[in-house]
Amino acid sequence: MALKPILLVEDNPDDEELILRSLRKANLANEVLVARDGAQALDMLYGSASPPEGLRPALVLLDIKLPKVGGIDVLRRIRAEESTKHLPVVMLTSSSEDEDIIRSYESGANSYVRKPVDFGDFANAVQRLGLYWLLVNSVPALD
Image (cartoon, rainbow, N blue to C red; front, side, top):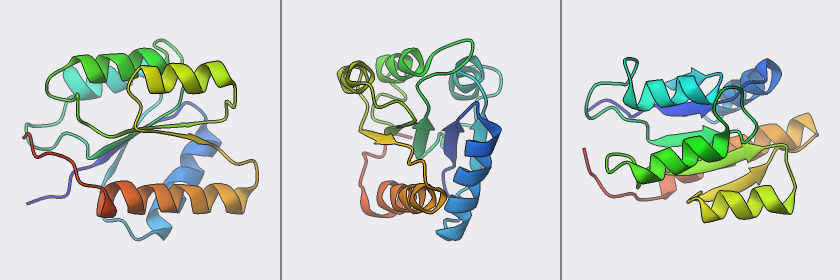
């Protein structure tokens, strides 16, 4: 069986590249699908760009502040749909505002991780996220 991909929803190209490099450095074999705005993420999950049945993402790394459809709205849609309501979603964002943290958890986020400013710290945080959510955490098999 093929490994399920990671869906990275990130509009900042520099952060995207750092996240991709960090996941590769952690030696995770999962393919990483990238959506650069919330509308594209929803299309990848539910629309014409959605993966074949059984290949829904194993994990969503979701920024809060996104063009077109915000990260909180994407999260709420993920939780509202039967096929994705148990999908692990990690809010990976530069926002440290209490309101964003509260809204994320109230909307069903599994975790909220602030992007560290330091390159090395950021890379380590992403590697640990990938290892935990893909290798340690257990989710129900719904596909």
